[in-house]
Image (tube, rainbow, N blue to C red; front, side, top):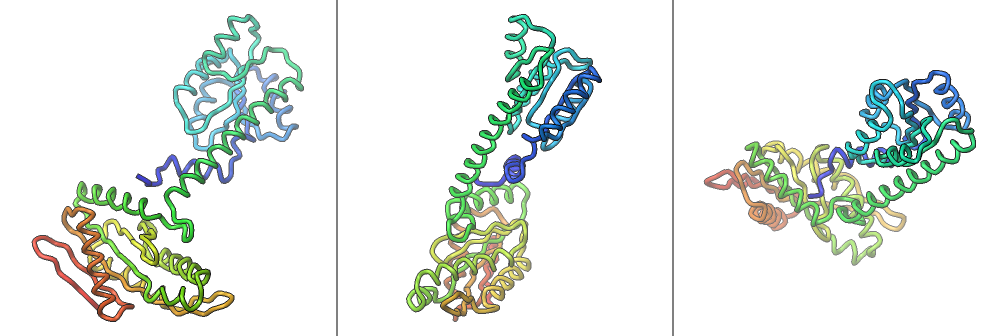
Length: 332
């Protein structure tokens, strides 16, 4: 299902403006050493959040957009560095956090134990600023690669679910959304509205003005439709010059209102390009479902209403109210 989840929203927001890899969380109980670390990192251009124990660090890590670069002391009050590593890895966040564990322990067994707990790197006190900076830069490179990978995945996901010309949901995605919305509506006994829209005489646009102008009309019509629907409605390109809108929690009156708003928005002003000025209208067939109805039946009813709107002169709306046992057809 191509629903946008809360995780995906957070991913998109974080990829768009990610400061987490430029922010470093220091958890160190030694006040003087904590201040030294903070001074070094700030001089290198990092934003620093410094806390005095593992418990405070864990609290910061529960927040949205928590730092992705962590410098944790092994021996701390509350939660020690190794346990904090284990908790972070067990959480399985949508974003990987790079952990540099620092300690006075230098036995090989301790190094292995720290890495097995989930640390990415290990630095033994005392260390010089150059070594710390080099290891932090390694972590930053890894987090940058992660961000680029997530951004590429988001772009692929968007392309898979959206129409390349109008950037609306594509046919597969909008039909999947329809199935999911009907399942939700059946559980909540809510009414769902469906609008099928077809641009009138669109073939003449392509024939008289060329396909580039036809594409411009499709993009502008899609934009006007998007602006006319409610913020939580779904709109997709059904095919060619046809569009499909899903209106959750929508009764007959709301469906009629939105459909008329779309019709007026599309016809309001001619669509202008560098070479043409083209008037455009849209015919709309809609159905409001107040009982559990299969998606194919709902699509067929909306398509039949659209056909009726076109047959009766175009640039108009026909709405069918699907309420068992009989259907009621309204045209205006």
